[in-house]
Image 1: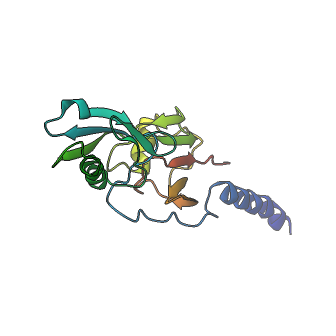
Image 2: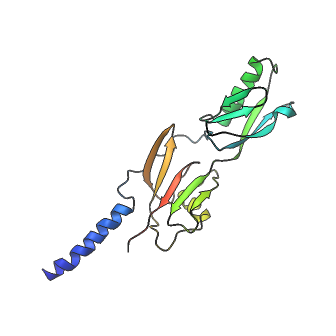
Length: 186
């Protein structure tokens, strides 16, 4: 009986630790596409062949739009760089600004990833293609001594829907993701 009373508090602590660790979260949905889709905060370079005035760096605003010379507001959110280049070329052609425009678009700065919780320097880190949970944590200074190091929670927005799920340190992350490193209780 005495032995049972000593084990009971340990079981309660283990259950409490599991609740705070994110182990009760569903697995994070995988990235659906390897193609990068533009979003608010991304900075792009638009190059229009033969038109230096239309070749410039632009940032996608909070509404997911670009403010472009001659064209005004152009929706960019959710598009790939190739699709955006085609859309801009079509607009230049349809409004009779150019006969046969050639437009290319590339991302010069991705929207950030946010790392919270038990890391040395919580906050914003700059996304790079191929980034994993562990590389984002490394940029944030690494784990604190209190961190749970095998699983984290990631909040991700996919096509307007927000998901929160459990992830490992090898999970690929996307721009705009929020990584939360949990604290262990013992």
